[in-house]
Image 1 (tube, one colour):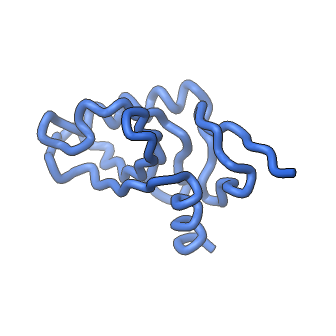
Image 2 (tube, helix red, strand yellow; image 1 turned 135 degrees about the vertical axis):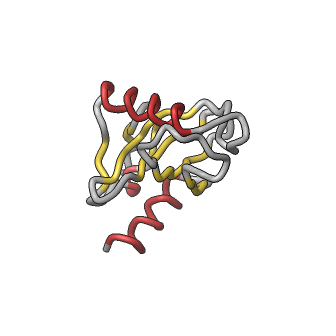
Amino acid sequence: MKQDFMIGGVVVEQSSHLILPWVVVDTRTAIALEKQLMREINQHHQLYGRILKTMARCEANDDVLFHDIDNNRFVLVHLTWSNNQNAEFPRFDYFSTFSDFIDYCKEEYE
C-alpha cells in the first residue's frame, strides 16, 4: 500500500521521491530562499503577489522548487542571487503536479 509523505508542508505521493541533486530544506533555509525570491521579483514579474512556499532546492545549481499556494501548482525558479529586479528574471517553470516535476527531474538528472 502506498503512503503519502510531506515535503515543505505539502503532501505528495510516495512514488514521487526527490532525486539527487534535489534535497528538502530545513525551515530556516526555506525562509531564506523565500526572502531571496521576494528580493528578486518586482510588481511586473508574473510571480509577484503569489504565496510561494519553499519545498526543495537543487544542489547542482540555483534552482528552487516552490509550492504556489493560490494555484496549488509547483514552480521551479532559477534564482539569480541579484537584487536587480526585472520582469524577465528570475526565470521559472510551472508544474501542475509534484509528479510532473519528478518526471522533469528524471529527464534532467538521471
